[in-house]
Length: 253
Image (cartoon, rainbow, N blue to C red; front, side, top):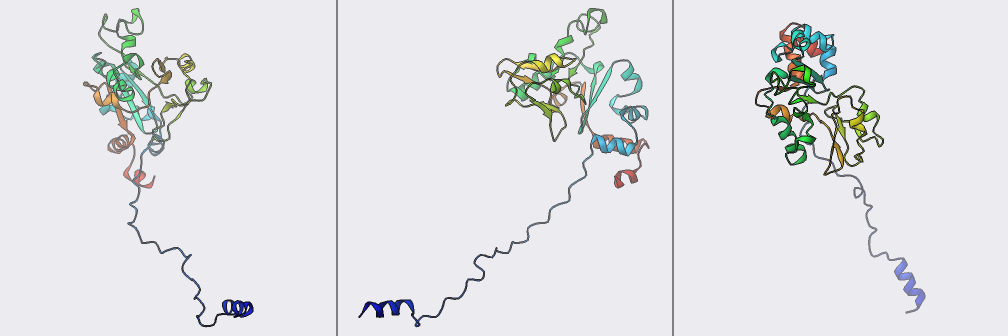
């Protein structure tokens, strides 16, 4: 057989039918209908609750909304109660309930650092344990045995973040607390120096700054309820009970 006949037979073979075009090979397979997503529950934040109440935190105090947690105008004016707020919680410290046991400091470092090391605790009692904020205050163990529970104020304009040379302090997206990025922190101590209350401390072992992240461990472990982390949802319900906010306002918000 000549080469020309061989080439002719292989190039024009009519004994086999033409292959059918692949129509659905590249088409995506139909996806099975999965379970329907449950509607997300409404999350109450500081912004939504204050907007619904039509007042600030001071208005909630005056209106008696926070009285069940011991927060009144008189208790704040006396210095017994201190309140701080984050987008997700209201943090209340009560000096009259603090026994000076320092369990909050121990549990704070045990959770966040894996060991008990009170000098780097994010909540502190020992700073003013002996004489309070000064000898003339008559506080502390050598005075009237009233103790001050100090922790981060979660400032709206935090000086610690403002003066950090490497921008290692930022707001947590979930809690709104000002937190330290340990991968960025260089342990220079500028945050502690810039803070009016010297809340951040440098951990000598890690070489980074430690700062309150509003985890709530101190409140969970306080045996006397001197520290409370209150959900804004609970405050919203109390505002309804006190007649400050109507149920219709909550539903419409």
